[in-house]
View 1 (cartoon, rainbow, N blue to C red):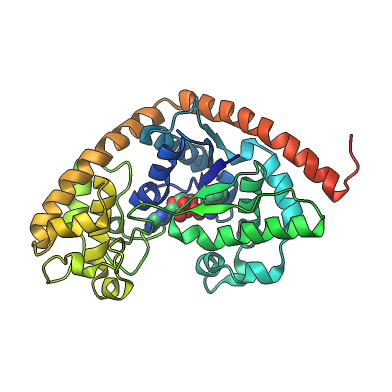
View 2: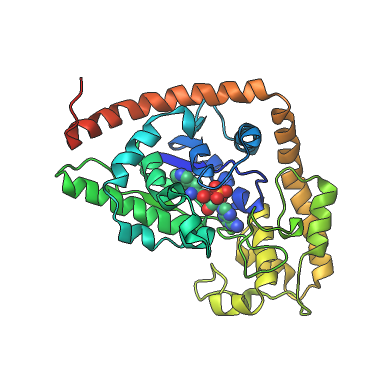
Length: 343
Ligand code: AMP
Ligand code: TRP
C-alpha cells in the first residue's frame, strides 16, 4: 500500500517556491493515496525561532495547506511536536545513521556556513529526524521540491541499514515525488539562487500572503535580460524540459517562464511556444494577471483562517491524534526489533 508523507517548516513567510515545489503537489495526491501533511516545528527549531512566533507560523503553514485545497477530513494535517513518535524514532536513527553520511549533506553546509562549530547538533541530525517523520508512518512516497532530494537519499540509506542491521524487512525504501514545471523556483532578483525565506530582499520572493499590489510590484521589478523571450528551441530533445546549458545562459527568463507554466497548468513547451519572441514587458503583464488570479484567493483564505486560530488548532489537534494512532504500532515494533525491554 502507498502512503504519502511530507513536511513544511513553520519558519514564516511561505513563498511561491514552497507552493509550486511542494504544497500544490500535495493537493492532487489526496484522491489516490492516504496522505499525511506535517508542519515540522521540531525541524524549525534547529535554527533559532522566536517562541512568540512559532505557534502563529505553525498556523500559517496549516492555513496554506487548507487554503490550497488539502481536505483535513481526508488527509491528516498536524504539527510534528504533538506526536512523540517523531522524536522517539529519530533517536533510534541517530544510532543507525553514520557521521560520514551526515557530513555530506549540502543543506547543513549551506545553513551552518562558516560557523560550523556554532551550529546546533539538531541542525546536524536534521536529516535523521526527517527520516523518522516519514518512516514512523512507513510512508512510501514523499512529494518535495528538488532541494530535498539528498535528504530523501539519506532516508533510503537509513531504512536499508536498519533493515540489514536487524535482519528485518521492516521499513519501506521511500520514493521521492519531484514533479511539476517548477520543482526549483529561483529568486526574482538572481536566477542562480533558490527562492528562499532567508533571502534578505523581499523582492526576491512572492509570499503566499502577498496582496495583488505586492505581487504585481515584485514581478514588474523582477530581473530580466535585454533579449526577447526564448522559444521551443530551448527544449531538450524529448521536448519536455529546458536544456540545462541553455537555461544557464538566461536563468531569470527561464525561471519566470517556468513559474508561468506551473501556475497556468500548461507544459513548459506550450508556454515557450506561447511567448516566443515576446518582449518581457508584455509577458510580465500576463504573469502578473495569472499570479494574482491564482495566488490571490489562496492568500485571502489564509488570512481568513489565521484570523480564526481555534479552528486551525482543532484541525492540527485532531490530525495529531490520527497520526499518533498510525505511528504507535510502528514504534512498538521498532522497540521489539531493537530489543528494548517493555510491556
Ligand atoms: P521548507 O520551507 O524548507 O520546509 O520547504 C518546504 C517544501 O518546499 C520542501 O518540499 C521544499 O523542497 C520546497 N521548496 C522550498 N523552496 C523551494 C523553491 N525555491 N523551489 C521549489 N521548491 C521549494
Ligand atoms: N526538510 C524539509 C524541508 O526543509 C522539511 C521536512 C521535514 C520534510 N520532514 C520532512 C519533507 C519529511 C518531507 C518529508 O523542506
